[in-house]
Each structure stands twice: as structure tokens, then as C-alpha cells.
Length: 296
Image 1: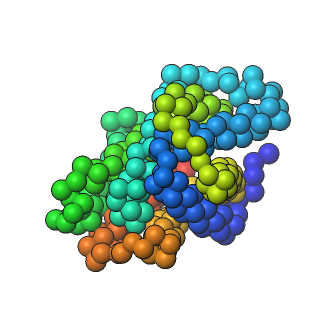
Image 2: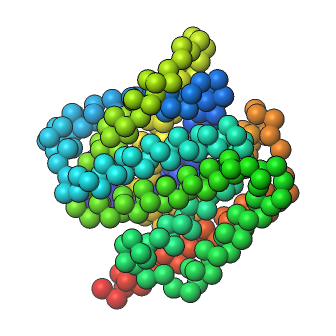
């Protein structure tokens, strides 16, 4: 039986997901300022892997069902892309700050739209291309002349957005044959295996206080993924995805209040352009899907 659709509940779940993601990113920045990014991400993925293994063990079919995939190479690639993306964006948080890094990272839906043609063979019309170009004008406004534009660190959130877009497209591709539980399992386990050698090479002992923050980060990561899965189970992705941009609002609140960051006018303007272009792109995708269903 299919899960009953409840768009209102899905929207609230997406808002809650964004709030938890923002807290998670703030904790990641705090820990990565004092410890290696690789170590922080490694511990996070250890917890993530344990979480998905426990879920798989309790599900029908157990671990055997969770490991059974029609796309083993692509599933491994997905896991590698995600762990690399998290490492890159956390470096961006430390070097650029939460607000500026997230303002650039917000362009990832536009990258998904741009790459969906060559990777998935989807048709990208002129309206979506116009939105993509507009969005990247917003990115250029964010990275206008200033200290960040002359630093290679300014490219970190853009690289992270590119990696996350590839991850999302591969997730969409494998979902045709692999269920959510299978992809979730492979993501956690592959990520943990891949990051462990780097994390152990950069190990440093944390204070009891930092271990407390680390534990909170791990719990936040598990909760955010659970909320996101629950959100997509009760509402169509195209209906709730525009609300994902609220994460930028929560990030701005954390950055301004806890990390002493500033919201430069060009960052606010550029982020608004990127968000508007992203919302339009998602809306166009929803219209196309609705037209396809009606035609079918």
C-alpha cells in the first residue's frame, strides 16, 4: 500500500529538516575549527554507518536485502561523492563562514538541472537554462571583488554543490531499480570505509566537551536524514523542495548570532537571486511532471 500524501505535514517536516541541517553544519564548523575535517567527518560517518546497518538488520530481508543492488559501481560512487562533498563543504564553513559558503552552495539545484541533460538524458528547455544562467549570475554577485574572490577557498562551496548535484543525479538514476533503504545503506557504509584511513591519519584527541558536541552532531545527522526520508514519504518532492531553501535562513541566524559573521549586501542579493532561480527551476520540473502524468 502507498503512503497517504500529506503535503502540509511534508512542508513542516522539510522545515524541521532544514533547521536540523543548519545545527549540524554549525556543529561541524565548530569542531573542524579545532580538529581535522577528515577526523570529524570520519566519526560522523562511523555513526551514520552504524545507524544504517542497524536499520537494515531490522528491516525485512535484513542485511542481505540492503546490500543487494543492481548498480554496485554507481552505489559506491554515490558514497564516495557524498563523503567528499561533506569534507569540502565543511572546509568551506571554516574558511569562508557558514553564511557565505551556504549562499554559494544553494546553487546545487541549478547544477542538477544543468547536468540532468548529459547524465540522465532529460530535456532542459530554454526557460530552465535561463534560470540556471540567472542563478549563476547570483553566484558571481556573491563572489564579487573582496577577500573571498581572490582566495581558492571561495571555490570550495561551488565544488561541494557540484559534487552534491552529481550525488543527487546518481541517486535518481539508481532509484529506478534500488530502493531507498538500499541506497541509504550503501551511502553510509561506503562513506565510512572511504573516510576512515584519512580520518585516522589526522586523528587528534578531543576534550570531553568536544566529544559532547561530536555526539550531538552524530545525533543531528541521523535525525536530519530520518526527517528527510519521512518528508519524502508523505509528500511529493517537487511540492516540498522549495522550502529546502529555508536552510539558508537558519544558517544566517546561526552565523550572525553564534559565530559573529556578517551578512554582506552582495551576499544577500546574490543568495536571493540564486534562491529565486532555484525555486523557478523546481516549479518548472513540477509542471513538466504534472503534464507527463496527465498525458499518460
